[in-house]
Image 1 (cartoon, rainbow, N blue to C red):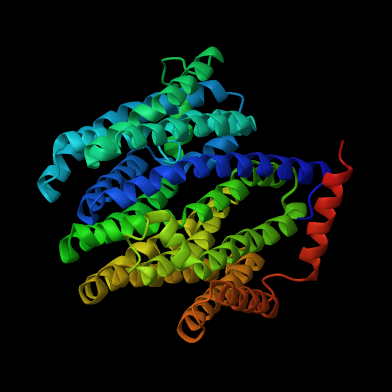
Image 2 (tube, rainbow, N blue to C red):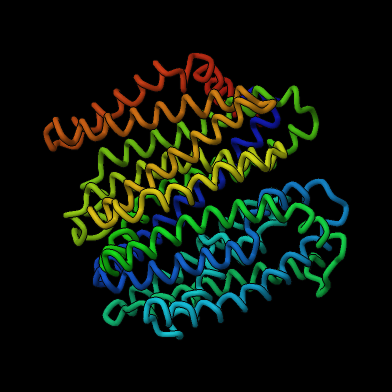
Amino acid sequence: MGAHPSRVRQYASMSMTLLLGQLIYYAVYFWGIRIILSTLPKEENGIVTLVQQWSMTVFSILLMTGYNTFLVHQLRTEHTQRQLYSTVVWLRAGLGILGALGLSVALTVLAGIHPAVTLIGATAVLLLASSNTLRTTLELHLQAQMRFATIVLLSILDSILIVLLLWWNQSCLNALTIFAIQALGTLPSFITLLVIAWRQNALKLSFDRSALDILFRHATPLSLVTVFIYTHTIVDITLLAFLSGKASVGILGATNYATVPLSVLQGVLWTPLIPLLSQAIGENLHAARPLLVRAVRLVPFLIGFVGSILAAAAPLVITLLTRGTYRDHTVEFLLQLWVFGFAAILFAVQHYGILLSQYRIALAATSGLVIGSFLFDWWLIGAWATVGLLLAKLLSHILACIIAAVMFVRSEFPEIGREIGRLLLWMSAGGAVVGGAYGLLPTAMLGRGFAISVGILGMAVAIRVVDWDDRALVLRILRRQASSP
């Protein structure tokens, strides 16, 4: 990516650590997902999904998780690291408790869900390693120190305990017991993170005024980005519950699990890349521009390409994931994978908006998601239930990415806008390739997979999402890794 050789090796090493850890984590947790999806009725899974999504929305807004990239950047550059970290942890802990209590009241009134289910579910979301809430907050100083192995090991411990508890209790699973198992299974590693932070003297019970000033001086753009993202999510799922019922929400929740490999890949690629990009920008923005342009193009490309492979194997994925319970919902799973491809572009836009101090671009792009929800949800859900919702999400993400591309072109970083435009064109064409393969080719998975892979790669080369220089870059990275001691 045009980076210094040692930086390239550092990135490759950290990415490999995260990848191996995530593969182990989800190889174990996969069995837990199978137990949940094959045991729970769709309506009960809808309750699980509603509580999880509402909890993630409320906590992400209250806990201001849009700051996480900014906080990692600050923890690597500021001298008041411990004061900032302590202030953020205690502030978010207090807001998390208030949020859980408010959620229990809101979901009882809106959806008739028992307060105990919501309270325990909200607690599980706060503690889970895969959630972007209080657990992630405790991990921020480890991310800033590049201590990814510790984070990975604790996540694997979570998955082992959760799956064992699910297996032992699979005859009596419901929404309440699933949330209780998740909360108990993740508690040991959560306590370990607390102990690590406390022993490093990073959890003083204090609120530093300068740290609060750092947070709230940037509050408007970063907090609003989070508000828009999660307002889009909660509007979608709430309208689906009201217009089509909890069973449709359960189907949507099941399709979310199909994107887990893509979510893992996204984390593996971006988690170590963000601090490295931050360092490169701080050293010399002009020299870092080629790295920024290549990263914003290649990372979403890799996620989209892996998504196309999963799309080719969708019937097999559904069978393995749900033991055939959702075999009649292949279209929903395919659409969810396509939505994630556009979400990967928008994910990059959010990070770049923060790293390059282009907050208005991240803000405008994510506002496009909310606009899309109100434009498309009500009539598409009414017409096609879960399929309609996923089509609405697809259109919303395309709108948001177009806004980002136009604004980057009109900013001081037009080359980033052009790369986003290429990715949009390629991602749209890729969906057409997958749809054509399912509509025209036999059901043999290998033949369909080969046709999709060739079509996707061919379009990527034609649109110049990948080129010969990218191949040369990969070879250089491999040579450097092979020659490193």
